[in-house]
Amino acid sequence: MDLNTLERLLAPLFPGLMGVRLTEATPERVRAEMPVRPDLCTAGGILHGGAYMAFADTLGAVGTVLNLPAGKRTTTTDSSTKFIAGAKVGSTVSADSVALHRGRTTMVWQTSIFNADGRLCAVVTQTQLVLD
Image (tube, rainbow, N blue to C red; front, side, top):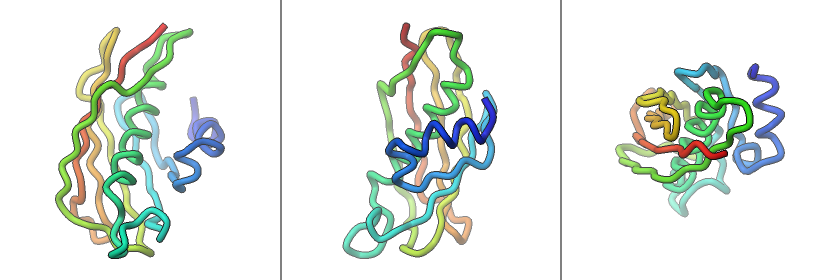
């Protein structure tokens, strides 16, 4: 699946509402950007923790979809987030998600999210279950 096809799939879904834009998508790595809008922030103008998690979850799911055999689907079963720094409203965060494990029944992805200054903001590790 190419980037345009993936973008069309995401556009009407939650990632599209959040403004997620894929910049690279291969079976081993997914990269993306997301604007830090006021509606994704805390009252202090910093990207909400749930937005970080949803952003990362999207990338891990996309990576898993790119690895699925025909007729299979996926869902997240586990996610762990470490928050390190903040991203200010009006900026853009970027993320790099890499496959740690691509098995027959589960896949594990680790996503690093960076603020506009290139500072690491969060690291999310998630497990995707492969379903019939």
